[in-house]
Amino acid sequence: MPFRRTRDLGTRTLVLGRVAPLAALVWSVCTQAHADSPPVPDPTTRWGLDVYGGAIFSVGSRSSPLNYTIVPLIPTLRSGAVMRRPLGSGDLVVRTRFSLLIEPIVQGPETHYIGLAAAPSIEWWNAARTYSTFFSIGGGFGWMDSRGPAVPGGQGQDFNFNWFMHGGVSVQVTDRVNASLGLYFQHISNGGMNSVNPGIDALGPMLGVGWRF
Image (cartoon, rainbow, N blue to C red; front, top):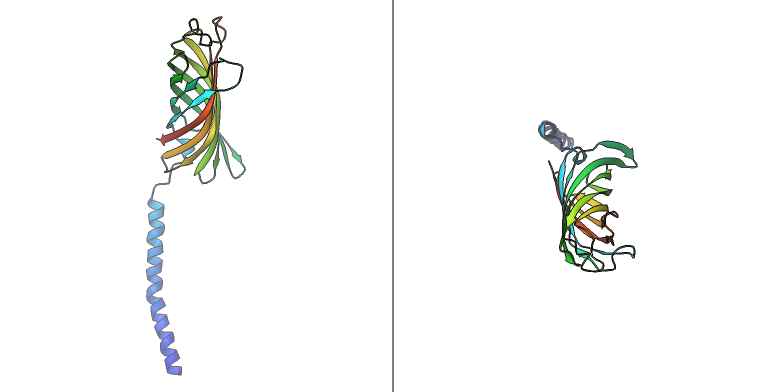
């Protein structure tokens, strides 16, 4: 029995003597490979192109009595962070966004609205940078084929201002690609430049996909 215990102890010592250096080598290789791999860039530091699409519908009683339905396609260029503050378990980030508004009007006397808009993008990112919540409020200007003089409730002139609010949640699909879901509110009017100025207030869901570069 003492001989057997001695043999077992010798076998274990031999196995450990061979496995331990191998384990140390594997650990060293894995650590070195991790150290050599480039770090994943923080998405808040990079510029990005987001494309939003959805449908918005007339809401409220302070605009045109006509029921408008608009299906916006909104390519948006978003800057890297211009401000960053720790907040809770993540970071509050402010970026800028510049949007091209391509908006077919599928219900209403006009047929389209084409414009530009800019706004700050206020975002809260979790520490792992896997998702964020965002909110933007801003505006710009654009043109449509107005029908107001001929159609009661239609817009009074082609040149119009726009004002919008956009909020939602964005998820990082990869280190460069994100997807988002949110709500989009938009007001269009000529700001009293024309005596016919019913305006359009519209609200609806918006999906988005973005690329960071």
